[in-house]
Length: 239
Image (cartoon, helix red, strand yellow):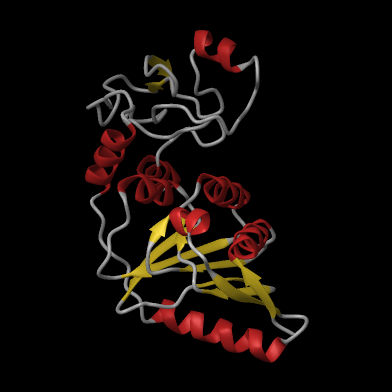
């Protein structure tokens, strides 16, 4: 049986849906403004590298620079745009939420929303119908072409971070950059902090603490000790 949800219920169950995803995660929303709490959960699922995350938004809208930069940093995410999308649906392998609420922080905090939650174990026929429609939306969507450098520049301006380095590749072989201060450092993804910055980081030892630079190319990037290189460098290093 489907469960009725109000605004707070949608927000809570959406967090649980993301947190409990083990294989597939679909986030279908015409408009995007991802709350920090959801970004944290998505980053956790991405670090596990066992969940395929599909984000679908409306084709004639734009993702703000900060959210676009965040999504592009996640290795497990596929972003696609759907023509005339108006549906809002959030789904993993066991649960589906259909709601009036976009994946939009303002809506979560200010709007009066409602929706329903369907568990596969309670109503497999209804769940499968929702899942099939979501898959159809994904299949008919197109992967947009983003300007990676422009989006990072816009995100930098929006968040008023320190200016990013113009260096694309370290001129010295086997050298990289400290992900906190940006100074030269021997390239080693397992040790992406210089001695001084490491001693500061060591006080809390939080591998998810967001730093400032990519360890490989030195460009401004929301790196962490767990993920010290930007997406572009990660792809190159994987080859």
